[in-house]
Length: 147
Image (cartoon, rainbow, N blue to C red):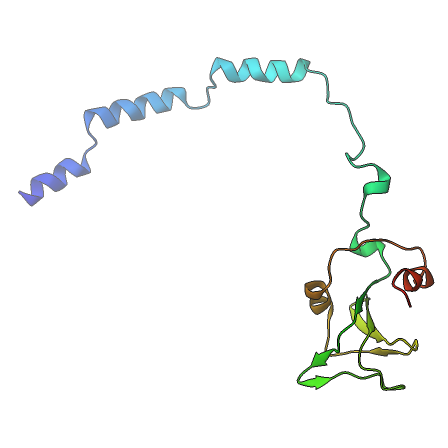
């Protein structure tokens, strides 16, 4: 009984033979609708080229167009279980955190800056909110943030 089933499975059925013959005859042929659609596409006028949908004053600069980003950090900054303090004046709160060229810098109220190697751009991106303004100079940004 098992041998009969295997023999039947080895030979294609009549329906399978007809399908194979029909597939061989239709190979390489396309339905007439495809040719009609190709002709319509060739006759159609090209779509007009338009500028970006946003006007220039609403566009946000990309990361590579900015020299850096900064955010205020009012509370004390604790890294690896210790509170970060300014190396020059000892301030430990009310920081400006600057992210530029894959480095993070801390700036205290007294304008002392120090690089913080325990922080990276990924940390900055996780903790910063959306940018509320773009400034042409570093000093303009400091004035905007009240420093």
